[in-house]
Amino acid sequence: MKAPQRHTSLASSVELQGSFTQGGMLVGSTEPGNRVLLDDVAIAVTDKGQFVFGFGRDAKLSHSLDIVRKDGTRTRQSIKIKKRKYDIQRINGIPRKMMQPSKKTLERTRAEAWLVKKARNVFTRQTHFLDGFIPPLKGRITGVYGSQRIFNGEPRRPHFGLDYAAPIGTVVKAPASGVVSLVHNDMFYSGGTLIVDHGMGISSTFIHLEKILVKKGDIIKQGDKIALVGTTGRSTGPHLDWRVNWFQVRLDPALLVSR
Image 1: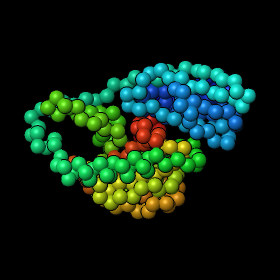
Image 2 (image 1 turned 30 degrees about the vertical axis):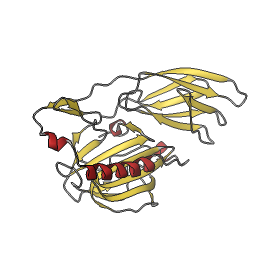
Image 3 (image 1 turned 90 degrees about the vertical axis):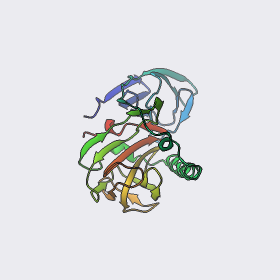
Image 4 (image 1 turned 180 degrees about the horizontal axis):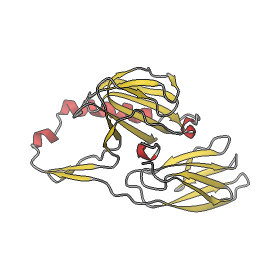
């Protein structure tokens, strides 16, 4: 189920809504014209005083939020988030050659990772994320955010998505409105890959797709058909892997929807 949402007034000049936990996204509002800093780093604020930010899988549990008013006065508030426990699976006896990709593969995956990073760094002042998110499809959850495998004692990259088991060809719908920022039909690890920008650094990534039904630059609405489920790339079976980011910070999609 969707994590409990909190509505917190940190001070008379700011309000926050969202999941106060690792992997959570928070949406804030302040007086128009105020500046906002998270841990002393400025974050974008709309003309209406709206802003958004999030916390990664292993984010520290204490943060500071500064509101700087037009007259230069500053208010600092502390934000406390909850620590999470993740599913860790240990597997031994994996042949080493399976864990060491070739030089050619490394070159390809680095180039593809750069494309994904570039798309997730897109900044627009659209605020589609304010309209909320819906599940991209109905299906059994087979993989969750934060889980991790340890092969032969070596920790692998954690899983940052929400996996839905579904037959090949199942329609994937846009969980929120936005603009298509990346379309790639065949990445080494993620296969058919689609990224949608929801504004202010919030984006959705959909991977292992059989077919992508939109093109880069398309404006899409929540609920639009955008892709078909597949098992492309390094996939163990037909499913959708849906991921959400705040720029390069990986958020938990399960905290944004009721499954």
